Length: 466
Image 1: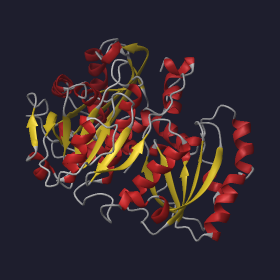
Image 2: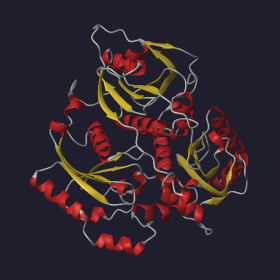
Image 3: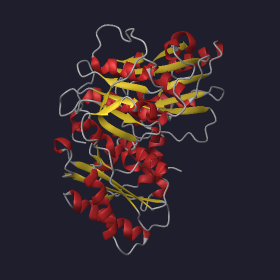
Image 4: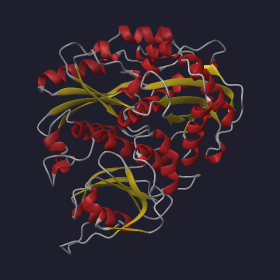
């Protein structure tokens, strides 16, 4: 069920307050009125209590406060507010919040579903097109209308040009369909963020199986499209065409959308808003055999693919942005936590100890700033396969049965620790190099995949304000 079904009111509320508590009070009041709750004070107290444990500001002017234990009929209820001038949200670098999305849930609501909804909301409201539509209009904004328009690809400014492009078949798409037929490919993988609209779906025909790679799943409504094998959540960072292929195929394999024996036709391109310019035929067993050097299965059975996707995306963000303008390096150790904990010693008091599992699940976008803050501490994040952060600032001391070198020259202690812990356990480790911004994924003591730090272009002046 999409998050729009839980909207207490589809209209975006104009927030008058310029501080965090005042904005919460306004949104809680609007929610109580919409769902017919007489007392808003308990809801407001729960929101503030959650905010004290960690800021729910997720960047790009968006905040996702949430509260549990609210006396509502449905499992969840959502209200959204906007402030053109900005709200003092006590965020890092004094960044103001312009869009506040309040999610409340009943006591018996499904924790996993709540985290999924938060992730959906983060992807939707961090979309450049959605933020622009909400903040640039003086009239009432209907979120259900916005969501439907996003899925139709209706936000491109030059509509005539868009219409013409939809009518004119892309030669790259045509080439991809021909290659898929000639090589008997399992599917066509399309890196959808290259373009702003969804016209390519109409051009791909009815016989081709599709895998969509995007950093904004809310852009697509593919539940009824039988051509689509799956949608892959790509990291929200700019990467090269080679990087697109690596990430897309890695995550498609982790999701089980494709197998080692399959062939794929991959369609990609340059910066968002340009056009597809590259089509490649990939034999996974030949071109990406290094994914399977140590095991037939890409991920251990206890690791959820969505958690793996989330950590790769977060690592990419941290590699690009750093913290307070300074580069940072860290390690995420994912899965097989019973074995991993036997090789861990805390360097500091564990900052995640004492919180509920729902409050420290890495899929929750509200934890982004907290994770980036604790990444500045020496040590690793230890994370269960279903996303619960067990500790930060953890010192890895793997006990290796063999003395051979696990890494080639040029790697430091952080990478050696990642290689070591994955050599003596079934865990996967993701490292960020402080010096180079390189993201490396380790499994069974070897580097399974390396991603270079992408080149980030200067933002347009209008986008800096959002």
